[in-house]
Amino acid sequence: MRRKKKNTEFAEDIINESTGKATDSKSRYATALKKTNKQIIDDVRFGRSVSLEFFRNNAWLLMVIVVALLSLIGLRYKTKTKMAQIQSLTTELQRAESSKLQEKAAYMSLIRETEMRRLVAEKGLGLDFQEQPPYELLIEN
View 1 (spheres, rainbow, N blue to C red):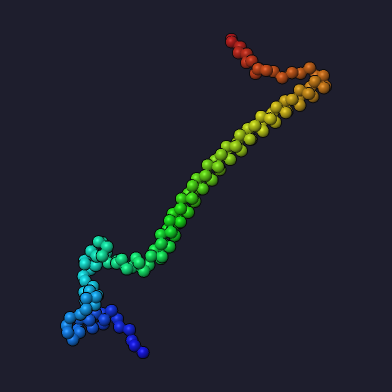
View 2 (cartoon, helix red, strand yellow):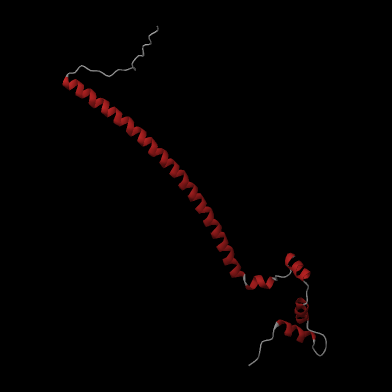
């Protein structure tokens, strides 16, 4: 059974070949292992670390990730708009309930007054509701 070599062992083997010269792809790999942090950061920054082959090999995965992110963004937008709509409908419902209570109070007042007039007329008491409030008389000394 063959043992897999680690990246550093592979790079050492490439560099320590008997001829002293490595093949083109192998030499690039060996130099990539020896890069400094600044070089690595520059490669990532300028897009040299991710090759076209990476995108070709992982195109479906990248498309799935992009579609998933777009659907999550859309879901979040839809949720926020629905929450705003729920809030406005709740406010409208509270106002309608308040208006209903006011109308009910006015209706009940009207029914009581009408019922009282009917009873007064039925009993023949001769009482009548005043249309204006009572006067206040001030006596001066």
